[in-house]
Each structure stands twice: as structure tokens, then as C-alpha cells.
Picture 1 (tube, rainbow, N blue to C red):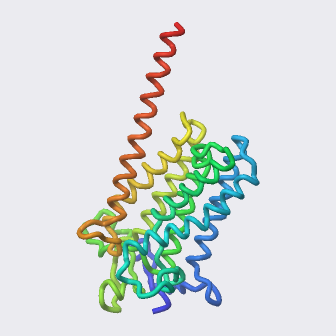
Picture 2 (picture 1 turned 180 degrees about the horizontal axis):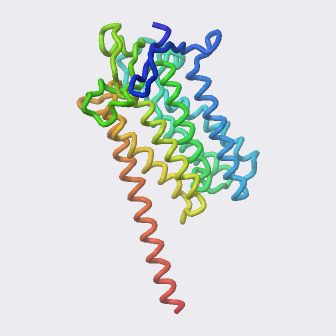
Picture 3 (picture 1 turned 90 degrees about the horizontal axis):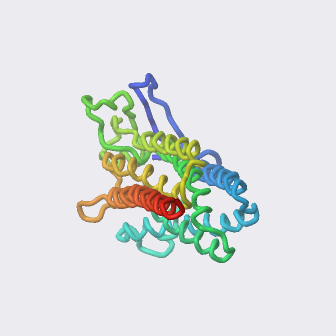
Length: 282
């Protein structure tokens, strides 16, 4: 099924049709993801200039960051769905879908650290510059899922306080998951995550200059994004699974705990160090 039929009756939006293809063979998903990358880069460039990092250095980082992130996102997805591939061509066919954000983030961080080490830049400061733009790009990217009629949740019960946000959907994914061509009213988890990420971006942007140590913004990103992802992932019906566990939910829990604990521990350590220094000098 090529076109997607959607509705948001709780918001007064009746059925309408969306074509995932913008023009020729170019999909809206690809356009939105690309636009998100561009905006994220310019935001990182804006922050980098504030701490004296050259534009050329950020361009060099982007040249390694973007392709490595795509490769990492694909590799992560493939490794968790190995039974779906019969050939190497199937493995590299990202145009058929199948990218996982965690793989992209991991590969992206490693590439940034490697380039920064070569250029003798402080990797944590560079990652702090990148993090707010990344979560903004993720907020935008979820709208690519909207055009594809995917990344939605289970059927939403009428008793749910979010019932007014229910999304009616008929798409390739809904037909595959529900086994019929009927419209099902589900959690618009793409929307939940997009709004959550947008709020995260605004908070990170507003409080950026209040960070107390290099790498704190990255930890803010880990704590905020993964707190939301941990709960939203539990609503989805297309999660990557290992046995009874949703992979992304487990990873989100670990990253949230790590990010939050990192902020608390570092701030306590710095406060004690400052107190000791004050006592010695006093």
C-alpha cells in the first residue's frame, strides 16, 4: 500500500490521505531527515563559534559524523533483525527502511571523538555543541514516520487520558500489524516523541550557558531523551525485540540512569572539590 490514510478525530481532523513520496522516487522521510541533519549542523556550528572552534573543523567533523551515523544506525538495526536478510544487498538496502537511532548515536559519538583527537579538540565540548541540534533533528525526524504511517503505538483505549490524541491509520504497517484494511485508532507515538524531543531541545537551548562542566549537555540529552523514549517505546507495536525485552526500552533505561547519575555525581564532586579548595585557601 503506497498511500497512507490518517485521521485525528479527537482533534477534529477527519480522514485524509498522505503520499509518502514527495516527487519521483524521493520520499518525505528522506527529505525530513536530511533537513534535520542540516539544521542540527548549523546549530552545532552556532555553538562551536561561541567557544572558538573553527567552521572548517566542524565541517570536517560532519564529514565523518553523518556517514558513520547512517552506517551505525543501519548496522544496529541489521544486527537485531538478522533473520530478515538473505543477501548483502538486503543488508545495505536502507531505501527499504530500517535505521535505529541508538546505533547512529553510538557511531556518531565514536567518530566525533576520533576526529577531535586527531584535531586536538576537546571532544566533550564538541559533543555539547552537537547534542541540542541532535534532539531537534530527532523531533523533526519523527514526522517522517508520520508520512510513512509508521512508528505508532497500540490501539488506544477510550479510558486513556490521551484518547483525544488518538490517530486513525491505514498503512502498510497497520495492515501488517493488524492483519486487515480497517482503520485502527492508535497511540500516535511519533507525535509523543516529537513533542518530547522539542521540549528537550528548548530546555537544552535555554540552559546551555548554565552548564557547569564539559559534557554536561550530552548527559542532559541522555537523561531527557531516554526518559521519554523509555516510556514511549512501551506503547509501540513495532519494537525491536530480544526475547521478551524491547531493545530500545532497555537501552533507554541504561542511558537515562547513566546520564542522570553522571550529572549528579559530577556536580557533587565539583562542589566538594570547590569546598575543599575554599577551606585550604581560607
